[in-house]
Image 1 (cartoon, rainbow over the protein chains, first blue to last red):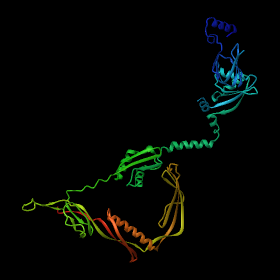
Image 2 (cartoon, each protein chain N blue to C red):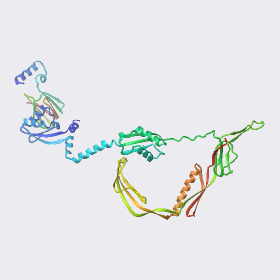
Image 3 (cartoon, each protein chain N blue to C red):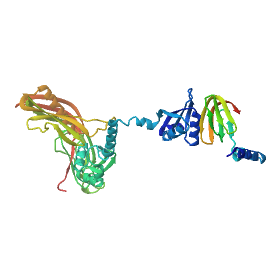
Image 4 (cartoon, rainbow over the protein chains, first blue to last red):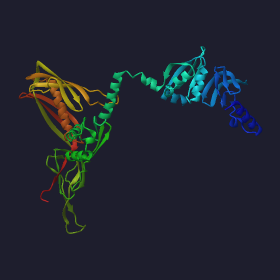
Length: 91
Length: 399
């Protein structure tokens, strides 16, 4: 999918109040308490460690900070991170 | 649960080293290769565990990600079993064990007889052996119904038998014949006479009439209770109605004196070993004997003693395998004078047993023993005062 097409779909979803993760394939991050983080539509792992995991979300990079972080499961579209999550940053 | 599944199907820990090891992880996720235990190493490499079945496809992914793969460790059941791949002795032993279980479970190894009290177990086992049921018999070949019928025909004392095959064990359940109660034939008429001389101590007449009283002495053969009953006529009548014959019944206990005698020769032949011995070793497998060394046949004048070693399971089940040794010793007989004290003791015991059998439910009072040597024999005499039932029914043959 081209960048222009992706931008168009993103704006369309925003204009028509449609879910962006379904229409434009935008990454969806779900935090369950401070021990579990689920992410859909990711683009892959960029860096991995017990205290910090970097995940590509396409236009943005998700940085998960914490202690004892572990990539519990990962597939082409979804991943699950467990551990003591201290913070989530977007770049 | 997931750990158990991973343990059962086996897992491989691999280390991917290269400029971009995260690409390798992402490729694994894209290709649907399940992985866990991800660990980023200080040297930039990444370690992860994958199922054993997914190990082969990792090489291609490693090449695409520009990483070199190194297998760190194999875990789980398949890896554990793979350690024994070259232990041929173990596989041979396992194969033999499996074959032994599969084959031997079709043979009878133990015949267990239960439920018998009077009929000896050895007699039942011997009968079953004649009919083809013994350790070593091929279980499916046993015609149980026929064998059960044949055993009942051969052993009259048995009224019911069931043969159950339980693995290698043939359980033989039997029920013995119940003796019918003694039925007194009331139509048989007769008297009760004294079977032994003595002094009456108790007299109970149930049927018939008696002329005796307690304290009187009777001789052997005296009629104690008559089977004739006088039917008296009515008061002020002209006479009695007549006599009625019945079966005389009652209890007549008396004080009796019994004398029993037993003897034993003063010289008895005993074995004197010449010193010549022979030994035979044999194997027994499923009831069949094979002589390994020597012959176990004992000619006349040779005494044979056997020793058998048979392995047993912890529950006491003897396996149908035994090793035996038979020792044959030649002997000659020579007369030896018996020990008088021991011989007298032996005879005393025999006389006491015989007296107890004669008295039955009665009791033995004072008794004395005398021992004399007469005509080359030791003769022991027992004199005893007894209290016993002396009445014996004698049918009236003229009736």
